[in-house]
Length: 327
Image (cartoon, rainbow, N blue to C red; front, side, top):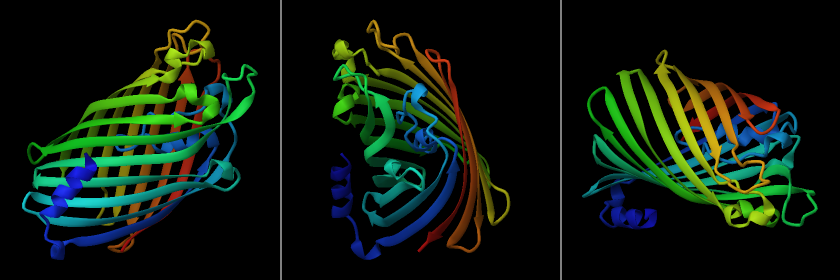
């Protein structure tokens, strides 16, 4: 769908009027839990809030410094159908103490504006061969600890419409597949997501974002009862955010997210049978514009996770500082 839309827009575009831009940045994080860091950072209305993590009993791997490089290149192409922005973003996490957790992701995006008030966004996202950590495998019957790796392929669509000077709505949907390495392939999952976002432009300097996602995931393990490892789920995600310009040079973003995972396994002997998980995440970020093209960031995140079928109560804290440069 994304490729077809891109070809249609380009076929009617005026190449001479295309505008190119590039943005590069780097953020350095301190985290107190390597196993939860990636999922915490990708939790958000525009991220991947249902990214799996290790079972709670296997987290708490340790502290680390993590560098996040990011590079985005995009072009704006006008056409007889409106204006389209095409972009490619590459992002990664590089761990200082635990390099086996190093990972990368790539996003391809097309954003088409039919009018100044109406637009549609198409996106493809992939995060290949991501290490979640070491988990107890079920396929061999030995219960040995093995590396658990994950590759995600996700396509999404978002329809945006500005209702008035102060109100904007977005309708969001996505579908994807998560594939695990051979030792955990019963956890391969197909999923789909739907949800609305509402944006209140309080002033020209401040806006409040409220969103909700409902997601259903179906795992191969639901049909392989011998492994007693069905990670099928219903995921509820609610988010409240405030983006504000405190001054001409300083911005502040505040977010609070709540997640509820209800595991739907009906397999006797599966620890997820009747299980659920609650996640609370709060974050804040300052962005200071040094010049028109350069900015500095500082941020903090805290997440708490609790599953009802284990006794531990996991949490993670992340502190960050970074720089952004637009070419």
